[in-house]
Length: 177
Image 1 (cartoon, rainbow, N blue to C red):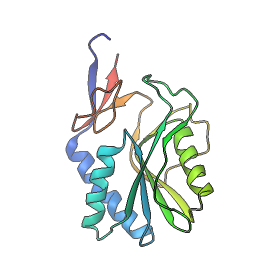
Image 2: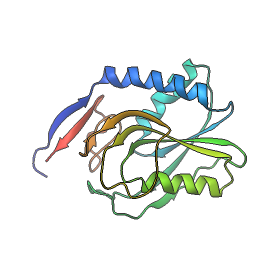
Image 3: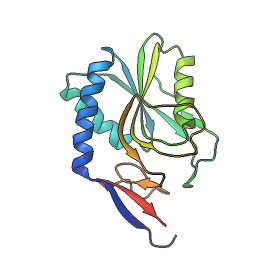
């Protein structure tokens, strides 16, 4: 791969400020005892910081993880979502907050939402760090809690990667190739 150019999009400070605002909103709207299910691997940094911000708001959700895949090393979704690891917690009769890094085509989050509802969740709400403005959104999936709007570009940093690179950036940047 030729040298990648990174154009900063959201700074570390902007992310931290927005995250605390989101935690306040989530704490005010979600029922006590909700389950937070983070979609790995891109959301792990966001989910960890969100858990700490929720704790500062007096919120202590049960936390679990799912691994779903639709990119397989590409900058474009394959169109097929694969469940690689399911959440282990029993979600029957519980409110669930699905946390992901980015809402792009909507396929992954629609899959997670449908899957958790089929497992008996009372409600499934969506929280994303980035909501990408894209014409590729095929599913009628929307996020209940959104950090930032995102241009229709491939972004990295703050846990998000391209081919396992750039996850450690403390900010979010557009990958220009």
